[in-house]
Length: 288
Image 1 (tube, rainbow, N blue to C red):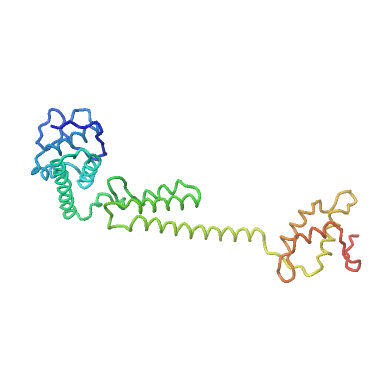
Image 2 (cartoon, rainbow, N blue to C red):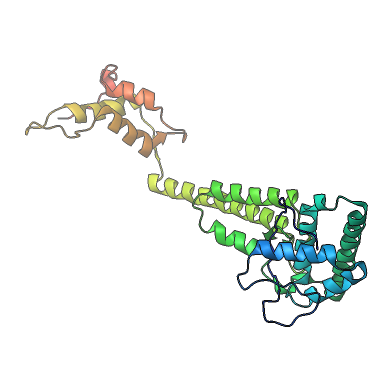
């Protein structure tokens, strides 16, 4: 048996059937010590693939595929293990073994897909998967609930779409829409919700401000009245309206409009409120 080189690369197996000491097992089993580690499993499996007879490779794959719940994913992990350690196949004989291993894995995968054309039946919540990543829109929606702002949700969904397109899954569920399409539809839904929320907020603000009433007189006269109410003292010494010019301007412009419905110019109101440009005497309103 060849020894495992020091630069051997380990990969992850979701399932790793092995025979522990004291168990009876066939020549295809992977014997391991009682203390399991992924590194030991990968090394033992790789050594088995290197040393077993070429004619027995198909039987080795058949044996292990019957020991796991998801044989397709196990085959993908084995293929990745071989790929990560391709430098070990550095001789003509080992290169031939590498070709044989990959071809038998493809044959076995194809036979499983024919028998089980919908490999995602066991993954109803998953849109697709490869040996490195699962894509689940239900999981995405759950994560969206943890995000507060509209911008954070859109950015997260766009990242998911980009990741999906850059690393498409090996297997896709036929029971659901593609993962990226569902994410795009969710973005569209969020955008519509945001627009509706903005419209609703605008209506609320309009309702709070109330309807502006038209003013048909001379704006100078109106502002002169307010100026007098704000400056002329009462018998008790206080003014009738203890407002600042800014407060009076805001009140007038938020409650009144021009006769034609156009807004009143705040700058003009502030100028008139200072009393620097009083109205003509025949239009002046006195406070007697």
